[in-house]
Length: 211
Image (cartoon, rainbow, N blue to C red):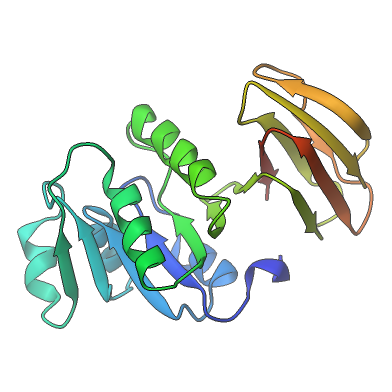
């Protein structure tokens, strides 16, 4: 998945279940910045990453993690109107950092996983976002996406909005301005080409690769 290995990539840890160190290094081999949403700091440290920026209300980060990061920047935001992940994305935006890979976004509490997915879609018009865990890679897409997945990769296209009209080539089940709504249509398609091209004509979707 070389399309993930691009320069100037910020690596973000949320407070979910992290993948292995090898998995993180596969997708973000040389992060320009390691940033954490509150308790994601512990997840990063456990994998051997040293966060440079930590943002949140600090109700999840462990005292020992704080003690280890003498040179990190801590930004405390106590607002309960958004999640620590969203608070962190706002800080990255303020600093002009728009290429963001997010891990440890899933697992743990289901409510947090869903909130992280929704937040990623919310910011997908102003950030180049990709999320990944141990088994999947997720792109929130509002306009278009071109990817080069391994052969016969299972790819699901799920509506992020109430309705989405989508065209896609390079998949077993081709879409041509097809309507996707919340539900089962779009699940478990399969790549049949070296290049998969997806265009969203209206609405928005999640493109989920099981790799």
